[in-house]
Image (cartoon, rainbow, N blue to C red; front, side):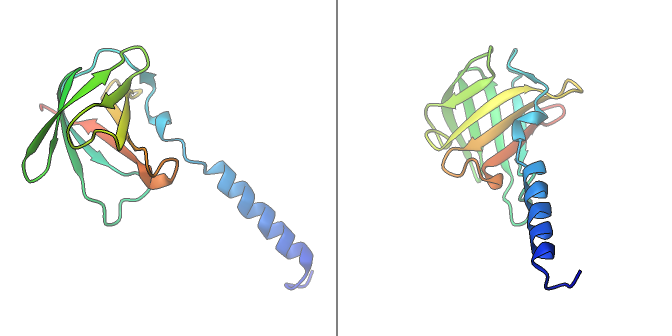
Length: 136
């Protein structure tokens, strides 16, 4: 088969389409057990799909109704939490409106939440993986 053959192009197109479908973004798969009791603490967030040039977010969860975004200073805010679904809705503060989250536990039992940028979703860099810092 010649490199310029239309069959080669068709084969490559099909191969790339299959690879793109297989690599579909499924950020919530990191949560093995969604919902449950919300564990207060400091959570460090990072983007799995876009680590280059990314600024780490640090979020302190103080209760099922309060959080603080920690940057150059501490920015408190209010939120609601549904223990059944794990959904966190930020109602005031730095994350209100633009972000929501889903909380749960990984297979190893560690608490985690996925912070979702509502303006960017479902693009890959719309999801931040937030893991609780040990001892915090």
